[in-house]
Each structure stands twice: as structure tokens, then as C-alpha cells.
Image: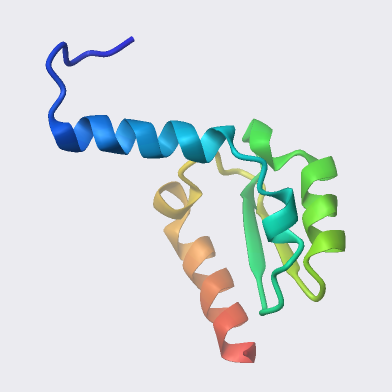
Length: 94
């Protein structure tokens, strides 16, 4: 499903980067995180499953999990006030 039959070199490279990123299992890397982390999730998005969020909480020691309940994938665009409040609160504590 490529809407552009003649993608540029840049588009090809970005497509390759994204497919390689999505194909990689990042669990071993995530487990090495040693800095403060806030995971922000969208309550109406399938990638925000409680099982995944709990895994983040258990795997990244000291992490903070926040869910914007009424949000979907692009929560920072659809809920900028709440996202910015969460981000500023998190950063002010660090």
C-alpha cells in the first residue's frame, strides 16, 4: 500500500528505518534504562494495554506511568494541555 509509486531515496530510507525499528525486540534495551522515565499512554489506543504499561513500570525502575484516558495515538496533539502538564510536572521533579 504505497500511495507514491516513485518514492524518493529519503522516503525509502525512512520506510526501511521504520520497518527495522518495528521488527526489533527492544525488551533487552528497555531493561537497561537507568534514568528517570515517564511513559505517557493514550487510554483509547490499543498499544496502551495495562499489561504493557505494567511491564514498563516493573522493568524501568522508578518509572512513572501516565494515561491520558480520552486520548488516542497522537495524544500530544489531541490533548496538548494535559500532555504538557504531565511533562512539565515530571521534568520539574527531576
